[in-house]
Length: 111
Image (cartoon, rainbow, N blue to C red; front, side, top):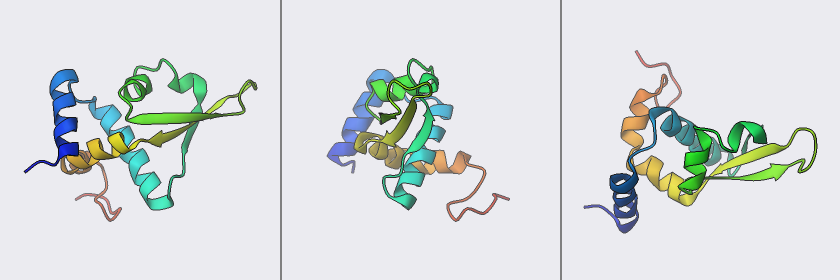
Protein backbone atom coordinates (compact mmCIF):
# COMPACT_ATOMS: atom_id res chain seq x y z
CA UNK A 1 0.00 0.00 0.00
CA UNK A 2 1.36 3.42 -0.95
CA UNK A 3 1.79 6.09 1.69
CA UNK A 4 0.36 9.58 1.23
CA UNK A 5 3.81 10.93 0.32
CA UNK A 6 4.32 8.17 -2.21
CA UNK A 7 0.82 8.77 -3.62
CA UNK A 8 1.64 12.46 -4.09
CA UNK A 9 4.85 11.62 -5.94
CA UNK A 10 3.08 9.06 -8.14
CA UNK A 11 0.28 11.56 -8.91
CA UNK A 12 2.84 14.18 -9.97
CA UNK A 13 4.68 11.62 -12.10
CA UNK A 14 1.42 10.68 -13.77
CA UNK A 15 0.74 14.35 -14.53
CA UNK A 16 4.25 15.57 -15.43
CA UNK A 17 6.16 12.37 -16.15
CA UNK A 18 9.30 11.08 -14.51
CA UNK A 19 12.57 12.90 -14.53
CA UNK A 20 15.05 11.78 -17.18
CA UNK A 21 17.47 9.01 -16.26
CA UNK A 22 20.28 11.57 -16.07
CA UNK A 23 18.22 13.79 -13.74
CA UNK A 24 17.25 10.81 -11.56
CA UNK A 25 20.89 9.74 -11.31
CA UNK A 26 21.97 13.27 -10.32
CA UNK A 27 19.16 13.63 -7.77
CA UNK A 28 19.92 10.19 -6.31
CA UNK A 29 23.67 10.86 -6.08
CA UNK A 30 23.14 14.21 -4.35
CA UNK A 31 20.62 12.58 -1.99
CA UNK A 32 23.12 9.85 -1.09
CA UNK A 33 25.82 12.44 -0.44
CA UNK A 34 23.47 14.42 1.80
CA UNK A 35 22.42 11.29 3.67
CA UNK A 36 26.00 10.16 4.30
CA UNK A 37 27.47 13.55 5.13
CA UNK A 38 24.45 15.30 6.60
CA UNK A 39 23.02 18.20 4.61
CA UNK A 40 26.33 18.86 2.86
CA UNK A 41 25.74 20.64 -0.43
CA UNK A 42 26.90 19.71 -3.88
CA UNK A 43 28.46 22.83 -5.38
CA UNK A 44 28.31 23.93 -9.02
CA UNK A 45 28.75 27.22 -10.77
CA UNK A 46 25.41 29.02 -10.72
CA UNK A 47 25.54 29.51 -14.49
CA UNK A 48 25.58 25.69 -14.92
CA UNK A 49 22.39 25.34 -12.83
CA UNK A 50 20.01 28.20 -13.66
CA UNK A 51 18.07 27.57 -16.87
CA UNK A 52 19.92 24.28 -17.35
CA UNK A 53 17.98 21.55 -19.19
CA UNK A 54 19.06 19.12 -16.48
CA UNK A 55 18.87 21.07 -13.21
CA UNK A 56 16.13 23.67 -13.81
CA UNK A 57 13.27 21.13 -14.19
CA UNK A 58 14.24 19.55 -10.84
CA UNK A 59 14.27 23.01 -9.25
CA UNK A 60 10.93 23.91 -10.83
CA UNK A 61 9.38 20.69 -9.50
CA UNK A 62 10.84 21.48 -6.05
CA UNK A 63 12.94 18.33 -5.87
CA UNK A 64 16.16 20.29 -5.77
CA UNK A 65 16.93 23.67 -4.28
CA UNK A 66 20.04 25.80 -3.95
CA UNK A 67 21.67 28.64 -2.08
CA UNK A 68 24.07 31.06 -3.72
CA UNK A 69 27.58 31.61 -2.40
CA UNK A 70 29.73 34.50 -3.56
CA UNK A 71 26.58 36.35 -4.65
CA UNK A 72 27.44 39.13 -7.06
CA UNK A 73 31.00 37.88 -7.39
CA UNK A 74 32.75 36.76 -10.52
CA UNK A 75 32.05 33.07 -9.83
CA UNK A 76 28.69 32.59 -8.11
CA UNK A 77 28.30 29.11 -6.64
CA UNK A 78 25.02 27.21 -6.37
CA UNK A 79 25.00 24.95 -3.31
CA UNK A 80 22.52 22.23 -4.32
CA UNK A 81 20.31 20.38 -1.83
CA UNK A 82 17.74 17.65 -2.43
CA UNK A 83 14.42 18.67 -0.86
CA UNK A 84 12.19 16.37 1.16
CA UNK A 85 10.07 15.94 -1.96
CA UNK A 86 13.20 14.97 -3.91
CA UNK A 87 14.12 12.47 -1.20
CA UNK A 88 10.63 10.96 -1.44
CA UNK A 89 11.05 10.68 -5.21
CA UNK A 90 14.37 8.88 -4.72
CA UNK A 91 12.79 6.51 -2.21
CA UNK A 92 9.82 5.81 -4.48
CA UNK A 93 12.02 4.92 -7.46
CA UNK A 94 15.16 3.99 -5.52
CA UNK A 95 15.31 0.32 -6.47
CA UNK A 96 15.21 1.15 -10.16
CA UNK A 97 17.65 4.08 -9.92
CA UNK A 98 20.08 2.13 -7.72
CA UNK A 99 20.14 -0.77 -10.18
CA UNK A 100 21.41 1.59 -12.92
CA UNK A 101 24.38 2.76 -10.85
CA UNK A 102 27.80 1.28 -11.68
CA UNK A 103 28.31 0.37 -8.01
CA UNK A 104 26.10 -1.53 -5.59
CA UNK A 105 24.75 0.06 -2.37
CA UNK A 106 27.95 -0.95 -0.55
CA UNK A 107 30.05 0.94 -3.12
CA UNK A 108 31.52 -2.13 -4.81
CA UNK A 109 31.51 -2.34 -8.62
CA UNK A 110 28.65 -4.38 -10.04
CA UNK A 111 29.65 -7.69 -11.61
